[in-house]
Length: 329
Ligand SMILES: [Fe+2]
Ligand SMILES: [Fe+2]
Image (cartoon, rainbow, N blue to C red; front, side, top):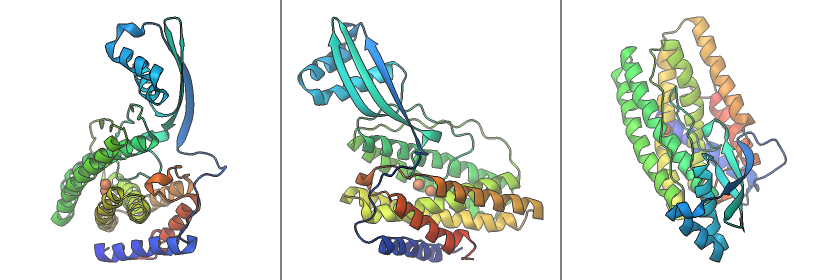
């Protein structure tokens, strides 16, 4: 599948979905089950606040400015080995103790909905440090996912080489890894702007895999997730509220379309080398990944221009009929 043709199809998907919803879009929210996030809370007590100069400073700041308490809660959560997006932080002082009650969200599978890309096999869910804002957390986790895509493409290039793939596919996989370095840097910069810090990427050592295993991973990560990543980034390049975000998502969208096209090219090459049974299993894995995306509930973060629930459904339906359902060859 040519990049130019795919770019045009995905643009049409986004434009058609925007036109169907009008300019106001659909406010995020709803009463459906939250499929991406676990909501947690904890009450923590520090009985030795004077033992730590950094903690002491945060306590003094919190005493005089309630807005500064969030950094105190973040540190106490960190010290207690709790991670997640801090949503609520209440601080009480009693005697020599500091008591904090925190509410925080933990993303299932380590990544927020809406931020997707090619993941390497063996990716370890991060132990995330709490960010001070929801935007900081979203960008930090997206940066983590982009950085993990660097590993995914380097591994893909190596395996393509080992399986005797055309050199053009290997070169494109290597080039995609370099794109992901740029994406990770862009998202990290935005994460820090909003008080987040991307977690380190950890991947267990890769194993030797059959061509079928590679094709199944590519069908899920390339044909579905990177294609959807391109659609969402295209959407955000139009709907994000400020110029820095729109520019970042536009650049990412441009590259992700190429990555998606590479996924489809690898799919075509690998399918031509697999027997009928393996081809069926690859197709079933792709269908299951498309369905899993349809079941995801988007995160409630209109401040980064993510599609809302109804918008995401429209985008998914359009992508399905234009691409995933065999509508484009
Ligand atoms: Fe990316
Ligand atoms: Fe990508």
